[in-house]
Length: 160
Image 1 (spheres, one colour):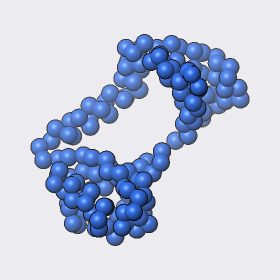
Image 2 (cartoon, one colour; image 1 turned 120 degrees about the horizontal axis):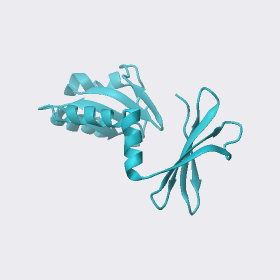
Image 3 (cartoon, helix red, strand yellow; image 1 turned 90 degrees about the vertical axis):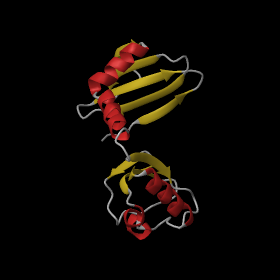
Image 4 (cartoon, one colour; image 1 turned 90 degrees about the horizontal axis):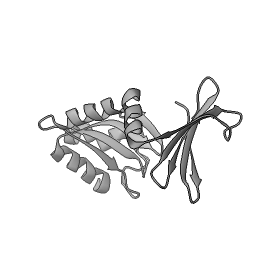
């Protein structure tokens, strides 16, 4: 997956863009006013748009639907409605006793019945990490289990 660049546009908003495999650059400017502008240009000249689209809120939602975003949200909502199942994102605080140690060292699944289904480190997701995956402060663990088990994971990461 290509890297998304984020550029602050003082007084205007934020620009997000990335290069495609075929040499184009796609970007979105989130204006402070709430307006969104989508643009396409060549990777060699990221300031000269070939196409620019100003999108309304409804058009943004339609584009997200077409690209499959609403399906992901719908699937997550369906999972969250399963009786007894909880999903959470747990931030690993600095000073955790498991900083620099592995998921296996914490014995999260064994002690709580909760599964770590992904670790997000900075902007990089690490799906389905194994027990050998190292835990670092500021990681975010995506976990699935019971609400009680997830509370126990939070406690384990804080106090051991």
